[in-house]
Length: 373
Image 1: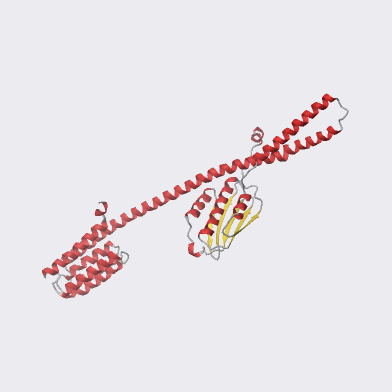
Image 2: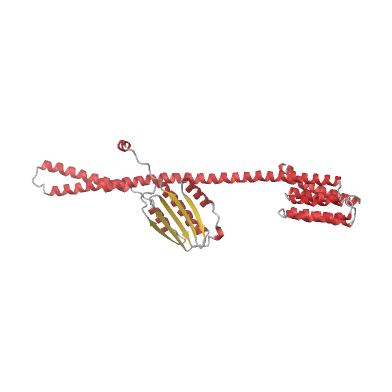
């Protein structure tokens, strides 16, 4: 029911009514002189109207109606009144140049004809403005809905990324603790145990009770060292992190050879950046499989004290034919922008995805704060 009152519906009704009125006048032998001229004029107006209805983009054909009306108006009678119909359509379609078609009226001024043509032009102008305003509202609604679903997709990606960052942070902390225990306390305890074993061999003439206590303490130290070794093993990460994770993804890429190169010191890269780099690498490799006939993929990771740059380049045919960003790359671009970085796509002989993220320096801690910690 809502479409019944649409401006396009009113335009079609008014235009059809105008053609019907001209046809009735032609049959009555009055208005447009029931002659062959009137018949051909009606035929042209009807055919052009049907043509525009079938091909809505060809609105410029209104010029044919205007030329036909002006050309046939020389036959006299009320034929010039038929110009109201194409003038009405031209104003509706926004073809404002059509008003110049009425200039010939100055040579044979007719107040009634001027009034009819003016009303037709104003009616078409009003309906056209109404239609364009309505269409703009629909376009705005569609864009808003599109942005809503895009933001929803980004929110889902960020939720997954946040969970992944939390998991990676926990695993990284466990790895750090295991490394510290193994490199520091573990080595010291093992060294002490070896020293005590050596000392035990030269304590043959000591008090048997003292030796028994010594052996018991040595056994407890050995048990403690074994427990520390087991704890370090349990704390060690079972999944790859950082550079190892990116290298593992490239090594297991099944479609083609993926060469991975690392430049610079990557030890200062935070976990949230590693998560972003993993997502970019997976998306770049996925695009190489889905959209390109790639035979080789090159992945370069450059790390400096201030930025980290990941470049995924494939030699497929994805370049010029598919230069627009897909939803995955668009979401990654917005995620990169959210952490101060950027993601760019370069299409040419090869297809490259480049992600650049700044490494934020941690604020120096106050000495008192460091002591309290």
